[in-house]
Amino acid sequence: MFIKPHFYAEAIANLLPEGTGFAMGGPMEWRTEFDNASGKMIQTIPTNVQLIDPNSTVKLPHRAEIEAEVIRLEKEWEDKEYQRLRKPEYPSLEVLADALYHQANGDNSKMEAYLAAVEAVKAKYPKG
Image (cartoon, rainbow, N blue to C red):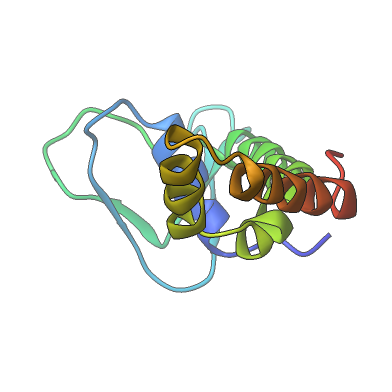
């Protein structure tokens, strides 16, 4: 599975409290933090992500949290492929507006054609 780079930024935004600004530069880089007293690893955090407010007490999410959210976002993206494929093939809103106009004036033929075209696209790209 290829992870789209923008999913990392979206994952971090989803994991931070609402309204927390951050800047991210380049591909993901990680730094492992250790407890000085025990020498045990505490967590792995991104090094190329900075909070915009340097005085913020918010902590960046750690690698496991970010990667789990990236996997969730990737699955959501894959599960909605049918929507992305359908969108350019649906009849336009102008066609719908024309069909509605004619329907309001007693002619259902254009609406029937519009609905048939929509059904054809849905049949071509069925829901996952």
